[in-house]
Image (tube, rainbow, N blue to C red; front, side, top):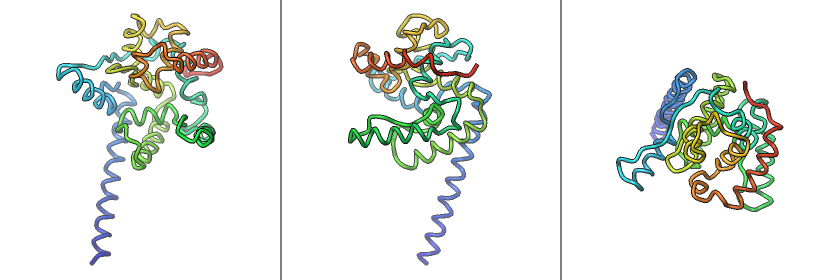
Length: 231
């Protein structure tokens, strides 16, 4: 009796997992051609913003095409987040190994090994939680994105949906918030600063003179000329 019950629950779980993957696949296929106006992280951010500022609070987000985003921002973000973006197929195993070694040396988590594709998978579909199931889902979605989208499309969507401050999503909203101009007009120094903000955007929105931010900006500014980005 117990064995039959476990078998039934196992079958239910298998069906549920399959259903979730089909849903993710449908989303990946759709957003390969249509621009996302909302993501899982945006929904979470809106809840947080409305809780703080009231139910009428709205996110700042404006989609812009890839060719209307400064080449400097593309280079800065790739240099900061995923320097081997054009080379890997979704997972930078060398980067993951280095991150593990760095974390072990420091005795705490100070570096991650997530690629732009992995970050995008998480932003589009998943919650900010760090549970093991979410990491498995992230990996599955990453494989889908890498196999169904071009690198140009991956970077275009990434730059348009990631968080850049409290209720601020995407390069255009970030450019207008911090520099009063469009994403197309960002210079190298401005691009390096925006890229440096990505790991902790809500904090850096109000702490733009933080030592860690300025140090990271300098490193990115020096490295951004060494990376290639999709044309």
